[in-house]
Length: 273
Ligand code: DGL
Image (cartoon, rainbow, N blue to C red; front, top):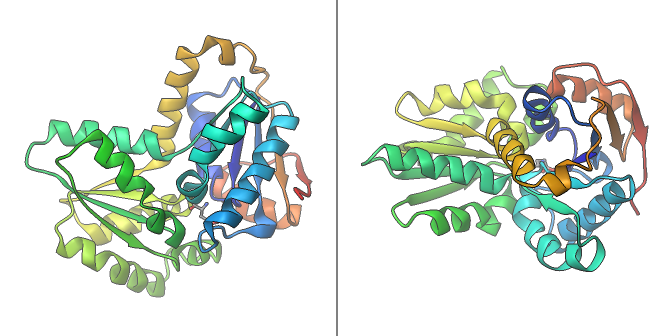
């Protein structure tokens, strides 16, 4: 099975892209809604929650886990990959969402000489971690990087306020510094921002190319599975899905089906502590 972990519902946008590109596999989704949002929490707490979540998914039989949450990918993934995994599940893997999108962006930059202004938006923790900038700088020394935390966007999306004028105003406020810098590329470094994709594109204008993770993460996962038959071969291919949440399953379904764009059959409530 392929595990997909997120702090809540947002990662369902990533699972949606997996179902489009790689529908044959079995997936387990875990949303830690009871403890979300992670985006304003300390690195220590985010790491602790992540350890509990990946342990849960491995115990459920996942061979591979994709951390769909940007905050977790930024704050906890490296330690999980370098220390926790070798000590606990040395043959299994945990991958995140930052490398796929930064690699795709740098490939695009190479095709467009003269365009090198990159903007990153995300939760407060993601931006403070500087994880996106670090990965981009490893891949290219030519980039001018600016970032902006947008902590109000997650609650606005969860309230369904996507089309409201208040949301547009807040978006304009957050994106203004990036617009003034004449950003050529903007990375949506948070699961929830996919839902605001069109609104963000509109504010940024035509000169800016907006990069959203789901498509790139699905492409990189397909490539990863092709390159790792020892893992791919162990993943069941019965097109089954199970959803776990740490909070109320009905609330998870109500918002989750909007993010996933389809019905969710089985949702179970679990405790990770
Ligand atoms: N999933 C988180 C992310 O992508 C957003 C929601 C949260 O803060 O928990 O950063």
